[in-house]
Length: 194
Image 1 (cartoon, rainbow, N blue to C red):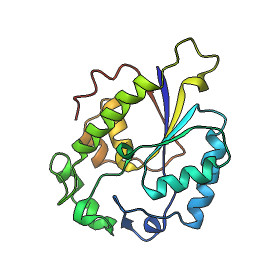
Image 2 (cartoon, helix red, strand yellow):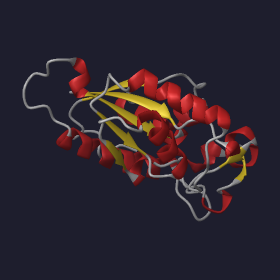
Image 3 (tube, rainbow, N blue to C red):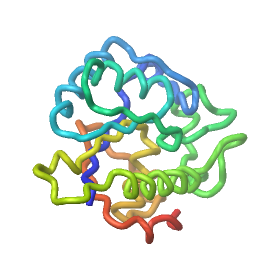
Image 4 (tube, one colour):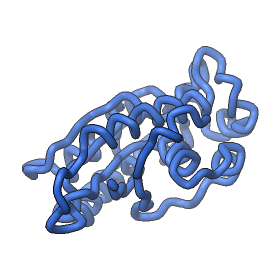
């Protein structure tokens, strides 16, 4: 069993200006750099590894949070935000106005939230197979990992690990909080879910 703590990347200049960055890089704002340092303070001594989206804003978050730390940091494209296609970089209000229409239908030139869930299911399957602790760990932190991603990453975690319908999690996003906790057991039944 693996304990997962999920955190979104820290605040970006796009977040502050109401832009849906999608698969564009994004850069942390001054407030975001402060949040990243606090994220590191929360988790530096309580996780065995950090997995992060390979988009620049997530990379910058973990670089600030864990720079100089011996924690392994693994970047993975499967932890990315939803690809809004031609709407990447457009105003958030425009991109999110019809989010529920993109549960199974991709954004123009992009992907759907079901596509995000499929890539996250593959990530969780690999995580379950690569982050095994063969003997009972001496502490829970030995089986706790941190994932730093995006809103769509969390939607997929809620769907796959808490069995919540995508229409529910995408339609009623939760307000920001300092971390969400999940438990990953056998993902063989999760791979086909979307």
